[in-house]
Image 1: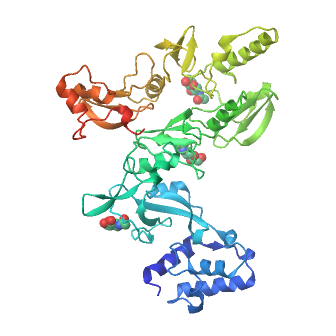
Image 2 (image 1 turned 45 degrees about the vertical axis):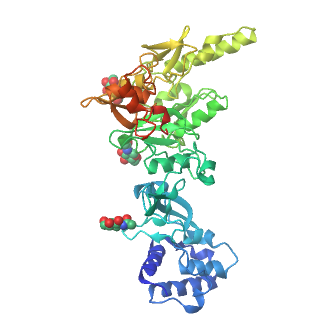
Image 3 (image 1 turned 180 degrees about the vertical axis):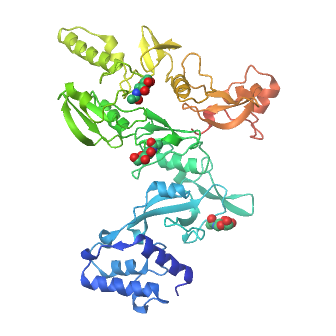
Length: 485
Ligand SMILES: *[C@@H]1O[C@H](CO)[C@@H](O)[C@H](O)[C@H]1NC(C)=O
Ligand SMILES: *[C@@H]1O[C@H](CO)[C@@H](O)[C@H](O)[C@H]1NC(C)=O
Ligand SMILES: *[C@@H]1O[C@H](CO)[C@@H](O)[C@H](O)[C@H]1NC(C)=O
């Protein structure tokens, strides 16, 4: 028997999701479609039709689609126009995007799994529709724990979804702990302090965001999740695609020298010049697609996308920026020199950002320095062989001040990086771990206990050491390095 809520589900699917392209369907199937549609809207389903489809029919598989699939040789999915649910639609309802979830496996949908601490069953019940949902992107409640979680006993009474126990069942051991999907799950269950965006193929999306829409940032990343050039404050990042950053990153990785300019957020600058072919043209900033006229290089200022202030940090007003020009000249010199059997080292170490400015870390003599976009040398420096330096904190301090925002962090004196431990809350004097992008996570501790987070309390009084590492009760603070980041 079909109950009322099931019928509602089907109606919702028919009205919101199902747009069958009529021309692609032969007359017989079209009649079946009409017949089934009438049945859907009526009180009962046709008896003969029902036995063909599995009983119970899976959720998100309307009777008529199921029947079409059973009655025909050709691929029914080809004729179903899915509603085009995107991962953003799912994130908005706190669920995850899943392919083949609705329309009997033809269309994507939003799936909502159980979180850490939610009661669960080892043999979970069939998926159900979210009864509270009113919009057209209703998630399907999977009634099982999120991928990566296990349904375990906590205490004696009930089972709840929890993180896999160390050395526990095999499936979690095989999980790639660096994969985007795994980290995303950790983020959604709040075990990780941020939630990465993943592509359908499991790679990291070009745009990643940390913090909240009010205080957070969005930045560009390569497909492995490594941060690359391009950053915007989250509340202004609506149109950020990072398409330019991804493109330039790929070109450089393949050994190509790109004269493509990205804007600070990682999108394309509207005006691009191709020095090799000697032309300049306008592009769509979000996609990089040609958008209007193409002019010879020397006429670039006549392009409709030209503006006096191409960048706010380069005052020369030329297409090639300071670092760009130095780099281009250096490359010519390098080619000449190698032709004559000379070795020019300095040129190889010059690193321009994707907007043509100097990259944050610049080699000056025998040291690395943090530099401003125009190459001006800042106070942070260390010897060439010392540990990794990204100057992220140094650069953010400049950026925040330009944006009129307060910046309360203290950068690492030598590297200009964010310190692994920093003042979290100036009023209460609490400290916390910081990630390399400056976002706090994990335990908050008073100043005395900062050594706990840094992981070395050997020179501290016994009572502090005891609080840091109480192995017996497992109640001590965890050092930053032991959090999953
Ligand atoms: C539906 O809403 C009610 C009241 O807001 C809430 O108690 C319940 O947990 C919600 N159910 C689901 C499945 O989200
Ligand atoms: C994003 O693009 C839309 C459409 O071009 C525009 O109306 C909107 O102001 C842009 N948002 C931001 C933050 O620039
Ligand atoms: C360009 O920048 C200068 C200095 O920041 C500013 O005074 C001027 O108004 C800007 N011009 C345009 C067209 O935005």
